[in-house]
Image: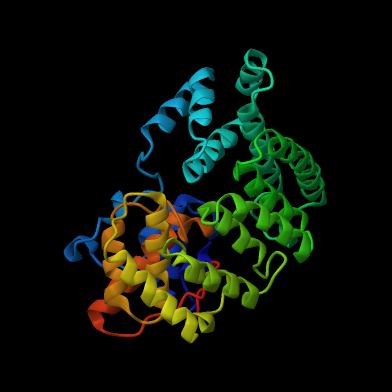
Length: 369
């Protein structure tokens, strides 16, 4: 985590951390993230610039869907009926359905007794099958974890692949029961990425998804991940996909920035196509707020890209619009999302105030000199 936040030349910050670690009787890498942040984050007094104070920034998102929040509370209390009804009601509102199914599946991956109460009361309910299939996808990714392959054990990989195979079978059942629903096809994309299927096989799944919903937001995000170098693609293929999606609809204007971030390369941000994509996204966001997770993610990537391009005052404007929320991308890609948000925000403010060129973050947790 410390390598994320400073370079060796930042000796004073390192010395402060060493003193604090000694005072607490721990190693420097064992210091709590908030303690590290106190000593190494840029001290910029954000409230002077219309920004939320550091202490108020949170990774907890605001409640956007009251009905979903209520059924999640019901499920935690062991009551499944309202959850089942909500899933059923989302048919046709595919982006919301994806959010509802994913949220319930995440709970089911940790405790699934309520799902079997649902099944017992409503045998053959196709919407149960969708949630069950997605819960297997969620469970598989929980088993694998988010660490790089080099830090993932053989047991984790074996469990990951075994549960993904079960998820694929369950998703195929969901497809047969709800042939017009794109949600099982998004699951198929996630499974295909994890199993690293060949490009042609992935392409078939992709065509099935877009035949049902050409502008499915989460489906496009999942596909872009497949085309990244870390999975089955390359930096070029991911950028190509992101640019094609952005050309298709303004709602995907941030996807080229996702691709640049995933590359981990500061040079990628300086490509003409990526610079244009940043401009297009910033222009689109002028008429938007930050009241949904998707919009906050788009603004987060815009802020990140603007810092790469040395456009610090514009980046500060994006952080101002984000307010207290560091709940989406790209912050979620870092080990400590809140600290990543505060660090980049502090860099942008300090550079904007001083009119100097700051450090460049290439992406994927890397910090350039």
